[in-house]
Image 1 (tube, rainbow, N blue to C red):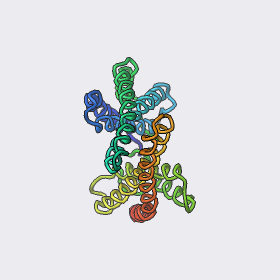
Image 2 (image 1 turned 90 degrees about the vertical axis):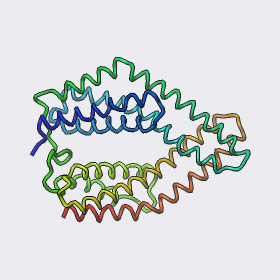
Image 3 (image 1 turned 180 degrees about the vertical axis):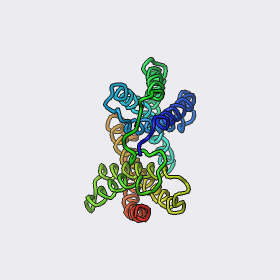
Image 4 (image 1 turned 180 degrees about the horizontal axis):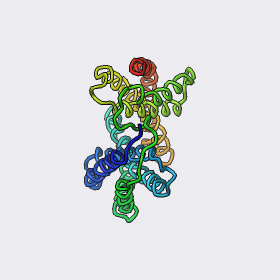
Amino acid sequence: MSVTTDQLSERLHAQLRELTAHEPGARAGDDPEAVHQMRVAVRRLRSILKIVAGAADPAVRQVRTELKWLGGVLGDVRDLDVLIGDLRPAVSLLPEPDRRAGLRLVEVFLAERQDARQHLITALDGARYRALRQQITALADRADLEGQDPAAEPAEPAEPGHVLRKPYRALTRALDTLPADPDDERLHALRIHCKRLRYAAELLRPTVRKKRVATARRACRQLQEILGEHQDAVVAAERIRSVAAAQDDPGLALAAGRIIEQKAGQRTAMREAWPTAARRVREAFADLIT
């Protein structure tokens, strides 16, 4: 079974609607969730285009390239939204006068976010983004657009094993090859495998082993959240350390050091939590596939 032209068309149009629906919020800048949802739509569009039989087609390659560009622009804002959102409560835990210095650190990232937001608005106002939307529509309307990888994107999966086997094997291979104390990059890669497996599980019809699918999705979401918190702590510490080194502000440097200590504690806690969560994922999905 392959994904039909009509099914691909509907999915492309649906994600384009998602992209444009959240654009006003992303422009306004009041709700970080709008940027996040635009970025999610970009990722889903890229995922859909991976299964197009004519993936070597110049038009498909062009759209995938342009989606990667847009995802990067959105990601610059989204990453700072996450960082600032995590940093503010961390600063609130500091004693005075470290708290005032911590607020100066927040101001540095707020200025970076403003620059990133301006870059995003410029991109959304530009001809490149308008052309991308038109190119997605043109692809969605093509009569010869067909899918070739039903394991990655089936339209109506009949059995969980058909949909889940490939991403599940990728996840288990990643788990089986992890050393006892994996580095941060390996855990980040594991999170990506988890995200792909969870996305595949969301393609299953609600009537297919409903309770076991729900259990597997919850297990996957828990592991993804744990590894996400781990990655956020790692990235935050790196960016805070970089800003502190560039500022001639001893108070800010001291506050930054205290916040980095908090992030180190968060990183340690997530490292202690992820193996149990990963075991639950393995067990839940193995039960579905067999």
